[in-house]
Image (cartoon, rainbow, N blue to C red; front, side):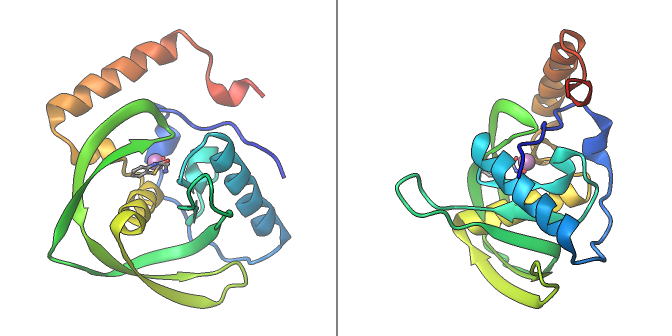
Length: 176
Ligand code: GNR
Ligand code: NI
């Protein structure tokens, strides 16, 4: 397994719409392992494939606390099939927008259909942090970032700041 460089705002790759996974093979397992290792290293609680430059509809999540055993979860071709009317607000962050945090309101509960690494259909009803994290990650698969859910004023400020930062550093994908 290996740690991959993270794609950072304002890289246009983050705006791509990812393609469904069709092959449940060794390279897919390798990618999911690399994504988990990259997420643990960051550290983060979730990661979408596009954040390491792979436009595939796949995401990983681990909500285990530091003193708990690892609990990696892989979601392939996930689809939200039901959203609660009830909303909840979480302070969100994103590994592709380092050190920026903002409150986002989303459905409190979602039902998600997805495939596991063997291509087997699965379903989960998620609430709390898992619901928020799944929605944040599934947004990534459609090129949507959590800053798209905050006010335009705040979003413009963040994007401007990251554009400036990008000018002072070489594109991360060249830094291999
Ligand atoms: O590590 C992460 N923490 C987080 C906190 C609140 C809501 C969503 C997240 S996901 C984020 C990792 C990330 O950027 N995933 O795409
Ligand atoms: Ni993110």
